[in-house]
Image 1: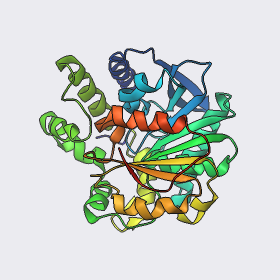
Image 2 (image 1 turned 30 degrees about the vertical axis):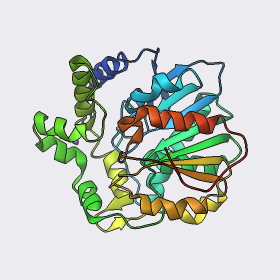
Image 3 (image 1 turned 180 degrees about the vertical axis):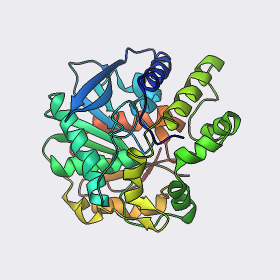
Image 4 (image 1 turned 60 degrees about the vertical axis):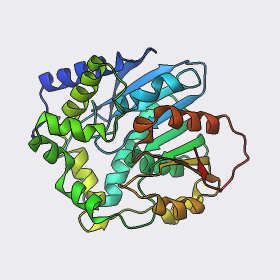
Amino acid sequence: MSSTQPTPADWEALRAAEKRLLALNPVTITAQDLTIEGEPIHYLETGNPHLPPLVMLHGRGGSAAMFSSIFALLAPHRHVYAIDMRGWGLSTRAPYTGATPAQAVAWWRDGVLATIDALGLHRYDLLGHSLGGMIAMEVALARPTDIDHLILEDTAGFPGSLGIVTRAYFAATPERLASWAPPSVFNRVLETSVMTKDLTPGARDAVRAYVRQLTLFPGTLVSGARAFNMILDLRGSHYDISQRMGELQPMTRVIWGAKDVVIPLSIVQAGVRLIPHGDLVVIPNVGHSPHLEAPEAFARNVLAFLARGPEVSLAPQMD
């Protein structure tokens, strides 16, 4: 794993791997690029442009393309935009130069807000996974009247202490660990978080190739990974927005995997009560990434929530 900046050949190789992955979808997905404050920002677009917009933010080490498993399920109902946040995917690998956890969060939040502005979106629904969920909350706090529905999937930022295994894993830096693992080991680990057992061999190879290339992409260590290590290290989490969760104005659905060992369900059950218009849906038998592990159940819950009016329930639900 190199901390050096990617070459044009590196960018083209990752772009080709993304294209191969997206080609597995039965719906048309368009890859787009913007320049935000001199930096490249990549995003994917699908669905009917006459339908309400849904903006999606990925988790740590991920990308917009990691929502590929649910694009076809959401596209008939929304105009979907999935953004590669700064430091990940096909967006900028400019070295992160901030010095505090708050600056790291603002780096991602401000990049997302600038991208949304460049897309001309004024009212939209917002979905975030893990780190992307925490940034989604920050976006909702910054633009409280712009968002109709907020969906938080196994989201960082809830009050509570993460386990030592989780802290040690991220402190060791997943990109470095992956660089030491042979492809066979990498693929076995990938099987635990990405639903590939029902894919054809060709599709499975496309998923594996994309995720490995994404994980080992040059420049990530000094960009996205460096910013993330400001937020979480071996000592614990250094950013908690629980004091401001009561200020969230949109209708909010929190979706969690019952077997999430990265951010345990026990943390969110208390935290969701801090959200004024929030409810919690628990999907059984999946871990930290329900959209990858149980895409149909996840999308069903998202669409049911997007179709809802103002009535909310704080009672947890099991899918």
